[in-house]
Image (cartoon, rainbow, N blue to C red; front, side, top):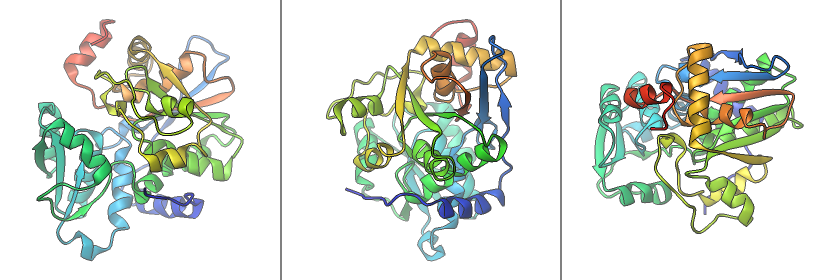
Length: 321
């Protein structure tokens, strides 16, 4: 098993310098909710160039990889935001990029990855899932960069935590969507170093809640209930051992929400703020609005806004797609 040492704040600050060379900080705005006494803030990572936070990690990972290792390009496994983030950063830095995706990848996602200049390799879904653990696929060349379980990736994500504390130093809690754990572990590492009393909570959908299962089991669960849904960006049916090893010391707890609660959060973001969030991106707000995150000044990370237009239409009509 991969064993990571705790992520140091110096690493995250160095990553912030690299990321700021390519990107502007994303806004932190107060949520226009019904209860004026609530202080809920939205960290709008859906406003990144690829409409998701993954671009930070991709920039940091490529800029910290030895140029010699990049001569044959990079490759990864992802059907969504990470593939687009790595493709964007690779094009920016003139590095060849290949993305392994499941053979049933939605055309809108495949087209977006190709538009950003990456090659696409389609594989059966079970093979696609296995690459996350094995980091290998026959025939692939170049340097593999993991979507969430690489140190440089988590360090890059940690820059979000720095930006939150720069804008809201007295934050009481941060709620983070849980996909593979790279976002949560990165952000939590930054905030724990600078404001350790801040509550760190993750949000999961009830269709796939592997970290909640891990907390209940006291370790990586063998069998996590999993149902595909429109919350695909946070729909992993597993927790990698190295991610659990980090998360258990950084995260205070998890909140599980229903698809109906996610739909309601997406609608509120659109109606109150003209903000388009994907299912995973709205998990944090859904968790806070459920009342399970406690009180005080709470930041919700809106992690992405890549949602299929046909699904968004149904959601805005009040349906669960």
